[in-house]
Length: 290
Image (cartoon, rainbow, N blue to C red; front, side, top):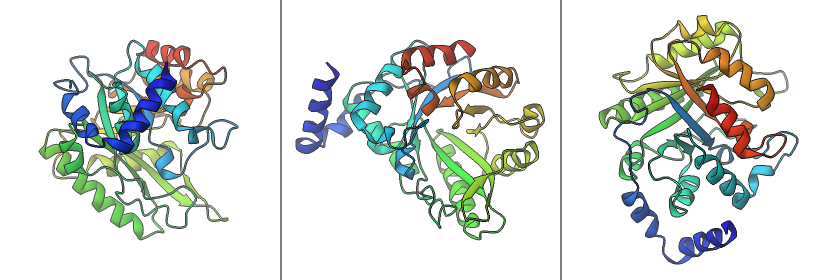
């Protein structure tokens, strides 16, 4: 059945591209993404646009778009899953598949810092911008902010993120900021510093971006001493999945979710490509924590 839906999707893209805007207009939206509970379970699918196509031991597994979309549809159908985070190509595929009614839809904004590139820290806004998020009826936008004190391109990303936070807030859209302190290794590879002290600094910088923080949420990894990290801000935070396997992620998520400002999860590869390939079971295990 999904094969037939996928063929219809590719046909629409080639012959009736205007259907994308119509599908966006028809989509049923929530009054406020986090609802009355103030909690969210979001599936992330914005990796490919930054050149990240691997999961586990398979370096190109996310390059199969039909397989990825089928996994996303399975995840979005599970009880307790609130929505999805993705780039325009993924979001529009899901719109045409009819998978986003009543779901929270967050647009990924800055994907210009391609993984492994010399210019990686210069994370330009090459996907969604504020006008596109508003025009498409999305519920908010997510931006990646990596702070490297040795790279002047950090300043450009900081300014772009600040403008995006202000712009989204002006339209009462969520601004989800994913901050890190990053540095180059001797071989030139950019690495995020996943210590408590580094994340305290990253959270503090991210919380102050823009003309208002009223609609800002944080997207943070689980690191040692999460209590101290979350004490650096009153902003609501979502835990990211990262590259660790589901078995190790679940206990860490459960502990961090007990903190008052931690309001949910944004997980991608850990749920979409679990070791046993059972997407539904992986998603259900994550939802149970909430």
